[in-house]
Length: 486
Image 1 (cartoon, rainbow, N blue to C red):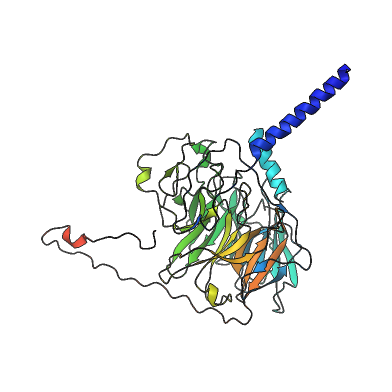
Image 2: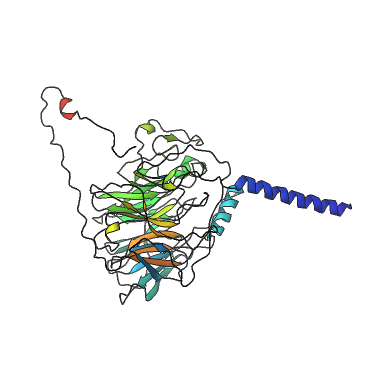
């Protein structure tokens, strides 16, 4: 054998060995639990199995043919409200019925090393590798037939940088770039967004989680901003996580910005539960602990709440991989999430069923959630829209119910990825499908609009104005375990 052939043979052998090694290291571990088992008020908590290198099992987007659509739950009908959009992620329904959609993607990913390489490779395969369009598009259904027949580019570029969060109040359109919140003068009915916006808050830029959610308080005085972590488990140092993995509160009058809640690895959409007046959010939990743990979640968020990231998850489970020192006494006040949504399902959008919604009696009281879909789990999880039923006291119940599915194919691909949810003025549910460039419309034909939400009314203990006898006697109470816990 000649020297050149020996060299060629050696190169080929090395390539084959590297390919085999890559397959062995990156192959996903088979999940042993169904998403339903990892969902609900008391999800199954599986023992963590650390992965040094993340496993990859992303479903490649293939789009939808002209005659194809997702599968809606019984009694519901799904149609295309708009199509031909460029990576539509978030949206906002205005009081006049117009819909603003953010065509967006992550800012350039500059992470180096093997982690950065695989992250960019993953985003490309997931249909999110293209540069951000940085556009806000207005959709209008002028004739009420359930399809947007008018489309206007409100603004593109010109100050927009990976825009995601959208909110409107007090004659202002609030837009969250990955690194700042902007306020534009805007009235519903406009089809352009001109002028120079006012920057009302700086945000920690980019990072592993670049989307920013926005929601205005019911009285229009406060703006809440969700900001995900820059890392998986704080591996970049906790200084890099300043005002991240948190929900921030901005006073729109004074400009005061403060941390409202923390320890939320990647909070996304937020919504108000009208029955209780509570703020709720959906959160993507950490990676590389195996395909079945920990569950992503839906939770209410009281002021000052701490959910444990990066040191703990689901209140009591310590992540031994974290090198940052555990803050003193943090175990004493970590809050348990309210409801599991399955491991690695990637919930992004959430909206509560409210007055006027037309999804029928089977979806009358609860929250609708878009699960964007896993990238590191086999079989894949998420890639759907689910409904979480709530009881009359504003608490989630049972397991999530399928509302919109059929995104995944039998050969491991996906037609699209549901991203955001919002209710249109006519009561239909709108769902953005970012990789397919579609906004889906879901409605129960003939269903009456949902009635107004009844607020939860509770009795309060009478204040103690005078101490008589044993000071502790008046405050003692007997407690029993939650009857819903197995």
